[in-house]
Each structure stands twice: as C-alpha cells, then as structure tokens.
Figure 1: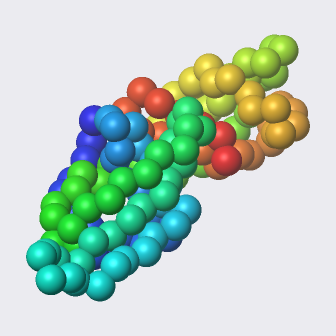
Figure 2: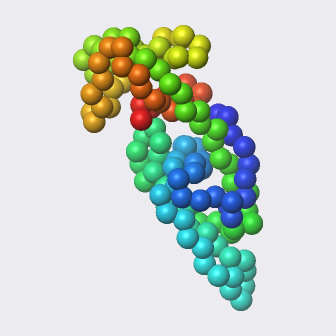
Length: 124
C-alpha cells in the first residue's frame, strides 16, 4: 500500500488516513486540550473510501499516523454490461473493469473521474 507518515495535528476534514489497514476519508476532526496527565488528543471520525465502513480513532496530536497516497484519475467509459463497466484510463490508455456504483448512471463515451490506490478503484 502506497503510504506516507504524517503527524495527527496536520490532518483535517476531507483528507485521507489509514485506520485498521483501510484507507478512510476524514469526516470529523476534533481536539481536546492538554490535561494534567498528558498531551492534547485528537478524535478522528472517518469513513472507508473503498468499503464505506465508519471508523474512529483517538490519538495524541503529536503522534505519527499513516496517510494513504490516493490518485485521482480521469477515464472514459468504453462499455457497460449490467453492474460492470470497462473504463479506459485517459493517461495510460489501460482498460480496467470496475463495478458501477448504484448512484452512477454512465454510458459509453462518457468521461468519468475515479480514485485509485494500488489495485483498488472507486468511481466518484
């Protein structure tokens, strides 16, 4: 998995983080003041990018955490077959078969945007 380390204090809503070995997008980020016995804590509420599961994490703000490297790419729909569709990447011209989300209505020759991390892909 392509990832890099970052401090928890540098995270913000809308950025990505790895929780339980899954790439997640941060929905809520809050911090608590430092107390008598420790440093400030951050609470992160996130949702899995590729699986949709909700996850939460509580860490000190000066702790290091892994952040996934997710690429945003452009593609063109080549064909649609039931729930699957073939998409051609507009940079590499590679053809990829992806499952079509329920809320997306795509037709051939339509340009789409998708997220890619290693072998996982999701249509936006």
